[in-house]
Length: 179
Image (cartoon, rainbow, N blue to C red):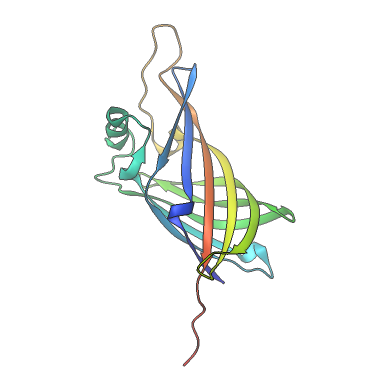
């Protein structure tokens, strides 16, 4: 079964420590993707997501500009990040571990997301929708995101651990009828 992401009802967000004393949160405004859901054998499910890195939004235009620069995402050269699943391991009726290749700045490493199935319903337009929440943590340095600044009080301006928080609403696509 093929499903697509409903962007108006989905979010890809992140959080990182700032100056070792607070947390800055941000999100990506534009992304797309599909899920090939095998409801008979969930382990066969495939996820493919593409994130427009230029649409980063941390509610500070100067910081967003710096994040788009070569110090971080270098969006002129690497406009997209991608996540392509490799495996799904169910842990109970509504939870699973989704493992996939996360590519940022042309660097690919494995990332694991803890996924929760939130349910399924018909939307007002007669389409079937399904909701999922996913969380994970990555170390930004694994993807070559090295820029930082030492603080006079000790420590660094930007934390290394990035927390990912994803809310996806998927819409089931009509199945093609053979001619």
